[in-house]
Image (cartoon, rainbow, N blue to C red; front, side, top):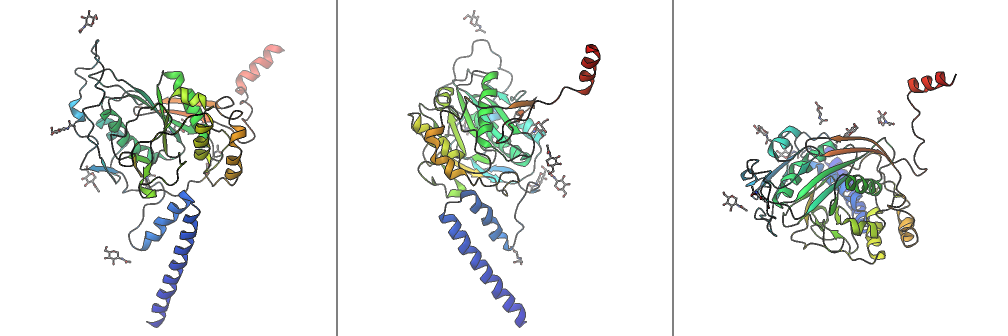
Length: 375
Ligand SMILES: *[C@@H]1O[C@H](CO)[C@@H](O)[C@H](O)[C@H]1NC(C)=O
Ligand SMILES: *[C@@H]1O[C@H](CO)[C@@H](O)[C@H](O)[C@H]1NC(C)=O
Ligand SMILES: *[C@@H]1O[C@H](CO)[C@@H](O)[C@H](O)[C@H]1NC(C)=O
Ligand SMILES: *[C@@H]1O[C@H](CO)[C@@H](O)[C@H](O)[C@H]1NC(C)=O
Ligand SMILES: *[C@@H]1O[C@H](CO)[C@@H](O)[C@H](O)[C@H]1NC(C)=O
Ligand SMILES: *[C@@H]1O[C@H](CO)[C@@H](O)[C@H](O)[C@H]1NC(C)=O
Ligand SMILES: *[C@@H]1O[C@H](CO)[C@@H](O)[C@H](O)[C@H]1NC(C)=O
């Protein structure tokens, strides 16, 4: 009995020490690291959802259901020849959407719930001509669960806004350290090849918007949309923060030479992008805290996305480097382009710090044939 109690005391002491460590870490604003530890503390009782195989984490909207009234749109009156422009403010917008996480659906069900989305994750309003064309660019690797949840919410969300939109998942091939910003450069170029998008939304796969007045269209300045995330207490963590979800027109993007290509691993690149915005003579626009709300799907730090230790040194040099590193120097190789019902999957080899690997040798058969032809 006694030993049981003293064990308990040690346990509490241990947890106290952990709390202090957490407090110290959070003072240093190690954003994602902290959110990694917090669920561990909560573990006392219920099993916490960690990892990707979360059997009971998906998404259910209560209250303002994100799918409410969308079924009234039908294919029936689509493809009319002379559609008039959609109204400036969509009548389908309801405001707050209650995002509750829980996992009980398949990708096929998401598809069924979004019957007007066509190959590659494209959509246009059936009853009017959209005023805006928005591409959603998602830097991605190995997050199937998150992608499913995002698609479940974001498709109807965008339909409420009467946008002409497309979904691009930019998948980093191989196991080398993740490079979010470079993938976004790839996404920009590949998406613009397909369509004359007038706005690009660079979107983390694990962020779900909670208010459909947060319109996915571009402003006159680059827009930071994910201003109020649940993990930061629905506040902006610091003034120059530009992470999570941001929106740039092609003109903005080229003016700031896109994003940096050399941030491998977690952290820094979003601040670099924020700095580029001002170096290029633009400012950051933001929705209100009330509207720019997002919920983050919980997860562990990913393998292959360790904290980038060089990020502060690199950030200090952005002023010197932004013109030499970005859209004008991005190198990659497209490995495949798949058109899924709810998204386009572009798999790319973006190489390493050392650059791209040499192109793969021609298949042995062809090589053998050309050899024999020479003979
Ligand atoms: C966990 O919580 C449940 C009720 O919420 C309680 O019955 C159970 O005893 C708790 N378990 C532990 C280990 O605290
Ligand atoms: C989750 O785990 C179960 C059993 O552990 C497995 O059958 C299932 O396929 C897994 N699901 C995913 C999405 O990995
Ligand atoms: C569409 O517009 C054209 C010319 O503007 C007109 O001739 C045609 O009848 C219209 N079609 C419909 C379905 O209104
Ligand atoms: C959605 O449908 C309900 C019931 O038909 C209606 O009361 C509500 O006004 C509709 N909302 C919008 C935004 O159309
Ligand atoms: C999951 O869906 C099935 C069928 O739609 C339903 O019976 C079940 O209650 C749901 N589970 C949860 C946890 O919502
Ligand atoms: C990546 O890692 C997995 C296991 O961790 C391994 O099976 C796979 O072959 C690796 N892929 C490459 C391209 O190295
Ligand atoms: C994208 O395509 C690659 C290559 O076929 C595949 O390995 C990967 O699983 C796909 N990802 C998604 C989310 O569809």
